[in-house]
Length: 206
Image (tube, rainbow, N blue to C red; front, side, top):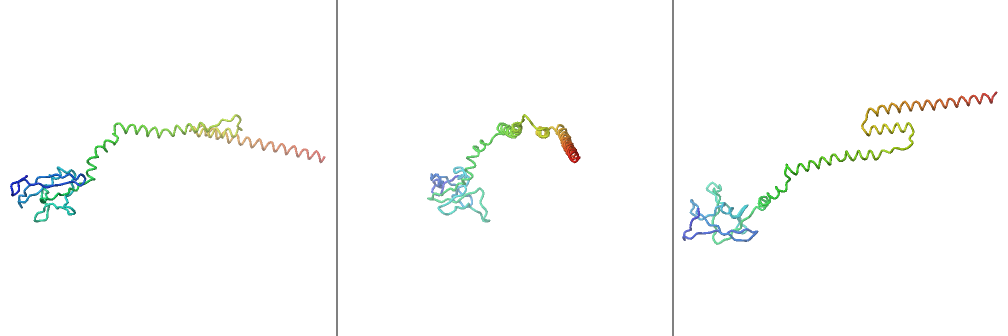
């Protein structure tokens, strides 16, 4: 409650914020126990948002305490007539309170932005598979003439690239059979050559 002092005039306490240096006068109230003029902390906070403490020059102005050294509720400070008290403002709290709406507005909403992000993510994940398929096709070179064994090996590789296990197994068996047939053919040719050579030697000795 705001009351007059002993002279019958309303007393005020001058406050200023270091950031603006603008002086604001807040009316005092009378403490019911001491009868002295006081300034309620809530009145200071109503003028100076995010007020943290009060200083008189280099000295901290403490809140009033009772006989048990507990702060009197509601919080209050003693009147300092003829003095301009400095209000220390919590700049971190002020930044949060003034910038909260801006920061929240910059966060993508789950309904709109997240869907676009998911689509972009899915597209990013799916792109390598398409690219790999393209690379595989571009790396496959079909020569005009390929040896039979090499051509079969090439088909096995081609089947592996295209994930066809049945054709891969069949091609592998064909390679083994074809390789064995070629070895037998070579062995037969060598034996025929040796036979002819032996026959020539016999004829020369005769």
